[in-house]
Image: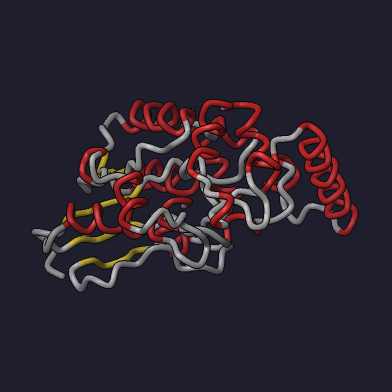
Length: 270
């Protein structure tokens, strides 16, 4: 790939790893004119948009927002195209239509070096386009940057962690089907309006629900919410009892693993 006409692009998801990579690239490679890009579904959490503004302040550079048809061909349009069939872990049409296709349209046929925020302590690949003009690069893997380093980069830069990490483990749409039930409870309690919007998409009679074998109406009942919180507390206690923190990142954040980060639509959650 000839260097003189290569576009350098970094997809910012609103998550910790892609944000840390954006800061890292600015500091380590100031000579590169990196384009920071966010694929906007218009179904994001309020905290995500707030965090993007904070990232722009630290980078001193705007993040280009991409969307699927500026709304008219967004999630609701594609939901109709798919016959009301909600996206799921097995049929991730939302990732294809609202993330990958807008990005690849934005890139076109230009030669691109795409910087991906997968860390050295992870075992996953993330989004890698099949387009021959897009070359994926993994600076964190190449430079041995792990989770502790990511947290340090975010802290020292002043950008910190996104506020949704107080109750959620990943970025992405407010109705992301990869959310744990405890995170759906978090949405109910923190953003009841968005919870109601998510609930309105369900067609329970046809089996179209965000959570397998449970509607959001059922999940939001007080007794069910209490049960979910109790089960989550037990799970965390059992996990903590099984082993000590492996590193400082776990000790300081209380996160015992990256299990949540190993699933999901990685173009959304990096």
